[in-house]
Length: 253
Image (tube, rainbow, N blue to C red):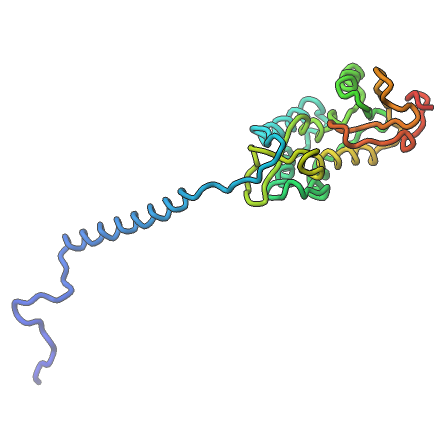
């Protein structure tokens, strides 16, 4: 029977028979092409300017904010109040930053801080809470002498946030270290003010109304009949005497 199979013509090589050297050259060229494409993409991404934060009148977030609140949390729960050693400072720190990151700093709500409040729930003796009125330095000196008394800054959250500034930006996942809203010139419901409002209200309404009070006694600017007692650092959260239990020991009876 005749053999009809095709055979390459003598002296000719198959069309796809590429030498090993040529194959290596093609691989090198292809690899270089991939590297060039990746480099171009990375260059485009890196050349984009970072997102611009909104500009405000107040100072920006305190440098190393997260590290500070985390360190203060451990100091408070392990040294100052070791009975709170079971608190998870990592979760607390994350809940704190999640309350304001990637959000409009002038649209903060107390609900933003609710997860943080739940993680830092703390029992304070009902007759050991000290409110202050225009006496920030004096009241803390008094509380330092009377070690059993609690000001807002003696609680876990107050201890962590005392003296710090913070805010985020809706267009960035980062903290705004350049500027944050000023309570008077930008907006009152900013991240910091809303935080202190929420913490102050929790301290005031969650505990017994049998508070010890310390009033400003150095001038006559405070009306003895209608006095305001403030429980946060900037004095923006205040309560009238009529809201407090009249207690002769407090000098109000």
